[in-house]
Length: 144
Image 1 (spheres, rainbow, N blue to C red):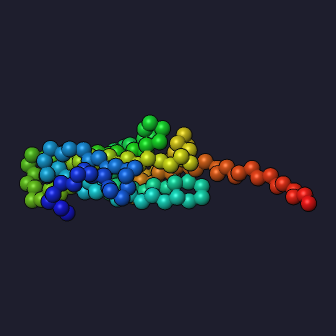
Image 2 (cartoon, helix red, strand yellow):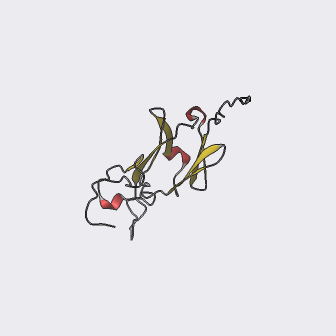
């Protein structure tokens, strides 16, 4: 971790078409365990499959959206559990927090058919692909 702020903010130099936007938190004590949600994106012959580790979140706390036709957006928020005034806390590491991840989907994505499911703290988003158009090739007979 660098002590010098990056000129790129949270964007990766190696992934110019993706961005990570972390919502401002009011204090360092509110950093949540999913603030660094890990994302895997694989492409199969049929679809793009994006998986995000979101431990401790319920599906009601997560949003999956397509913005401006091609921008896939994942966001979520965990709030602090209600506390009893008589309780004495020794450590609080599971605070509240927000996250927002955005990815530009490729041209072959069927954005109208996106599906999302969440199981055991893993969000899986499936974006079907358009069928690849095969070029129409016409053979020409060669005369002598």
